Amino acid sequence: VAEPITLPHKGAIPVGNGTTNGNANGKISNEGTKWESFAFEPIRESQVARAMYRRYFKDLDTYAESDIVIVGAGSCGLSTAYTLAKARPDLKIAIIEAGVAPGGGAWLGGQLFSAMVMRKPADKFLSDLGVPFEDEGAYVVVKHAALFTSTLLSRVLAFPNVKLFNATAVEDLITRRDDGSPGGLRVAGVVTNWTLVSMHHDDQSCMDPSTINAPVIISTTGHDGPFGAFSAKRLVSMQALDKLGGMRGLDMNTAEDAIVKGTREIVPGLICGGMELSEVDGANRMGPTFGAMAMSGVKAAEEALRVFEQ
Ligand code: AHZ
Image (tube, rainbow, N blue to C red):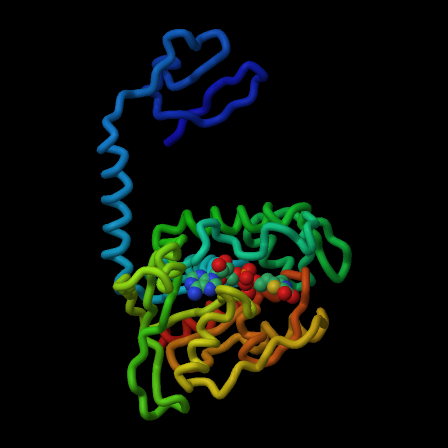
């Protein structure tokens, strides 16, 4: 557990474990620190490499069989992960995010503005997370979208049953034949690759992917774009969905309710939430109001948990 240190301006920040060069009790104070003799504990480079390798490969091994895979770590995917991990610490939840930086489009409120708007009742999600907001009656405002996203990320990553594999793209879906389902299949996992590898299939050969098996996949890859609407598009190309609905124009009132209500299992084994759903159902977009992303995440989590309660 980190110890507090005393700063010149009387603040206290945690540092080290009491063995730093500052002084014996782990406190570095303006008076007590001899900066000319300051030195970190020694390390060999291979220790750093192995500290990373060992954990990453253990995680790959552990999560090769997951209970739930969430595709996309935007506002919807992260809200889903938070709700699931909090409700069921016994489930193994893998999040696969194509970008190096998780968070999707939720680092700004809209255009390039900072504040993030959420319509009620999504304020309850913020209160549960511990994100402060200004109450404007029908809606609330978080002073910076990054405060919402960074808090949500930190809460999600702190759960011991969640692993985020970022810079990793879902390239395909694992499917099994299921004659009882409308599309004749069920989704049984995801096919993954490093995103930088995925981006070079056109100019390098033989870069086969890897896999994660899971009984429940939750796809929250956003609306159509270079990476977006991944599962919806793939399900159409394998004829498990008839066609893309095609996201409609912006209508905040219509869009947010439709996305939350529509969050569901779209083919056996695959739940779709967030703006990806607009490409399945032809729902309107809502623009810069984020309450539906949080509430769609809560509903996606509830749909998923039903599978484990049976
Ligand atoms: O990188 C993508 C982003 O972080 C990730 N992603 C997409 N395809 C992927 C793949 N493998 C792994 N094949 C993938 N990751 O999915 C994340 C989607 O986040 P997002 O913020 O784009 O979607 P969201 O549905 O969580 O939030 C939508 C926010 C929007 S868009 C919108 C409008 O356009 O009107 N309004 C709101 C509130």
